[in-house]
Length: 282
Image (tube, rainbow, N blue to C red; front, side, top):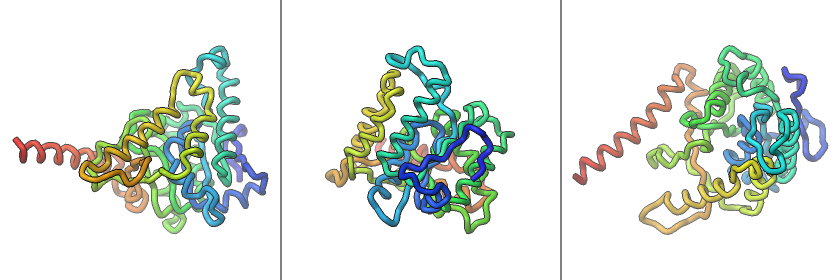
């Protein structure tokens, strides 16, 4: 598969042929940064883990050059951090038994540039080769610009594919903004209770981020545990870890829907629920 950046790469943990490995994909995550996949798409990773008929592929769009750094990594250059973060992502792919891990190696500035069609071309090539049933990505209410930009480029790419080559589901998962604010009917609830040790290991390999002062490992596991308890106010817990997603599938099967308008509809339903509850109880 020919990708646009000469520094891009597709890593296959089991050493098999790249095209064959990519073609095995059933679940895919397309994330902005190294470790986004392990936070956002834990559900897809666990759905495929140890299954002979399901296979997970990760795609990281940016190169990791702007990562925060401290402790062991405090004096690392951007080039050194890029190498460390790629190695950490390879470790995660091995731990999670991914069929393949792609590194597109774009800068964040390039991703946020709507005129940069090279990213869209690369995403189309990967999705066409992999034909995943489900794609996880960032939700469109995320507060990180690069995350939202990746989702918008992905939606644009999928809209350019023939309808029979688009995934069955596109899910926008939480990272830099929880989705517990969605009304319950709008939540796509993802049970990530299984293999808690694997979930923790996947987050723990990103030492450069943890040493850099961001305890994504503790925060992510804690958020999943909190969702499991606070999801239902009048029943006992039925799972130990949940993740929430926004269903973005309508955006890739009805090209006329504006992404901003689509997200606004979720916000409007939340606002209406709050107003109605206060009106009813006041």
